[in-house]
View (cartoon, rainbow, N blue to C red):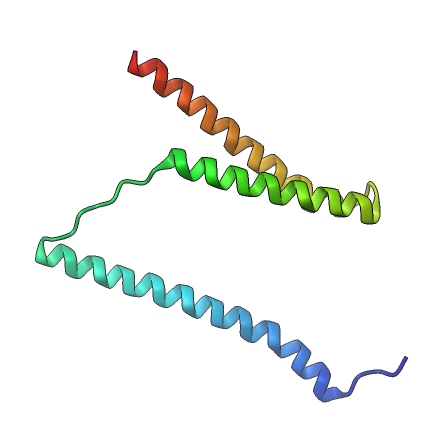
Length: 115
């Protein structure tokens, strides 16, 4: 098998680095501009703080992580059998299950407090 040229190796090495840097820049400027927007809104007295909905967040993230982890677990189980690669699916499954348990417990506590 012939080895790729030096230019191809450099390009293949640089593309992920550029992608990561660009992603970090997008996140940085989003956070910076939203911070400046909030500061201007506070100065003008029109800022209304939006409460964070922990129930919806834990339900959504729990379901997404559980299903993603389940798909990864099945894939790596079929591909490699029982190996360390299986952890890449079991970790999101366990985090997703814990978030779903948190959601259920929180709902039970809220319903008991509402009585």
